[in-house]
Length: 414
Image (cartoon, rainbow, N blue to C red; front, side):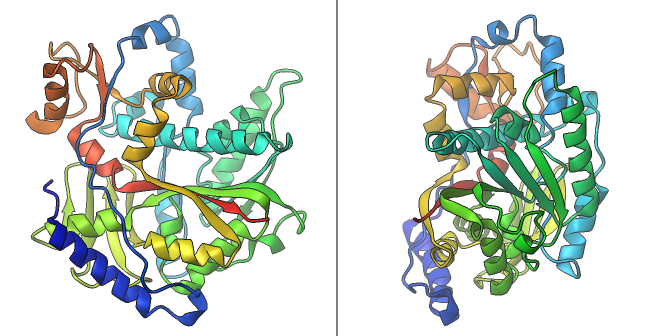
């Protein structure tokens, strides 16, 4: 995908910033917020020459891990009527698939890569909190079917509250927790948990907790927050639920689409849509990007096919200040990967989770994509002598899909 010219980038930024100037005074935001972006549509590559050694003799364990690490299904959020009902119904109707079918999925590595990103993000902030205290309490805002339960178990937290708009998903999350608890060995620790079906963009969650005075050390909101940007009131309520019961020094972490990247790709398109065989995004029109209610239809192969809303991150940052939050960092998925892969533990986790597809020029393995140009970046990387085989990568189509996202972290001020 061709990058925009500097002039075109400035025009995109200008159109979004003009909307900030018209934001209601209740936002208490500056009107001259800048906008950043990173096209990041070239493939990620990583040498996996030791992968066989890491996984040798552990085929059964790997299968168990793949069963225990549920799919990276961006959870379900928004309101219970209208758009929210559509979103909740979509995720409620998603069927669980078996291990064999999951491993044959066109987006098997993409979903594993997203899951790795979440694992590293969650692990980092559990470690940050544990430097200050041992008993950690977490709010999983948009828990879905329980895709992150194992991450919280591995993080040895004390208490977890799971909430989601989709009632069937919450039931499945609770059952998954009960199954996990039943599998625990004698004296093996597992956190206490409570489960709440609610629309976090409209309902005040603190009134639904078993303990209304409950305080959290971490609120995790993975692939969810963009559903709240239908209106200012909904986005603000979601923030209140995420941050209102955080302890001082607690963290609000998450993943969400990068609005600048979405608009940049849209403006570079000849139509009001863009994408490939893995994902597609369709806006109602080009050139007009209201701060709230800027709806687009998002489709991800086999997983998502629902409307979402553009989240202008500088505005989110300003809104978060009202709730006592300060930005720790914001990174595109590419930036996050390039930073975290320097850590050997993260690199080993990448291999164990099969987050990159093994690739070699010998044609000795079946690839998830049969498009000729989907691995050109890997071929060039090998040709330049930058890697030993097998090489770990994502197909170009998958990388274009995952690189529309960013990770973020806020800290509750003392």
